[in-house]
Length: 133
Image 1 (tube, rainbow, N blue to C red):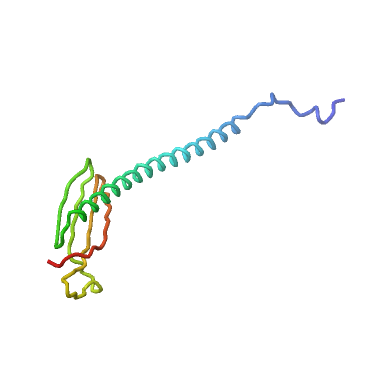
Image 2 (image 1 turned 90 degrees about the vertical axis):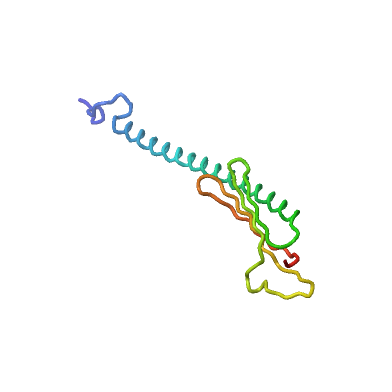
């Protein structure tokens, strides 16, 4: 007589087609998510590099502008590679900046705008005390 255990047919011990397909689907989903996150990281890195370079240009232009400025309004523009910039100095328009002084000083707003392809831009601003003109 045969035992109850021996009655069941024995397989070769391999994976079934359903198990293999399930594993492939899980692998495909995982790889897709990994590739999408890698592409997103590459995009962010490129954007970060653009902003860092634009900031360097903006700080350089701001420094050069303030180094040569002698009071009054001022405007200039230029390009560096694929980055364009505009520097502007004008009297600060905020109500708190309206002060009268005996020596004829005024508070000026200094704006530097850097732009590059893709519609991206960066703006730096500071205030500077100068002779009213």
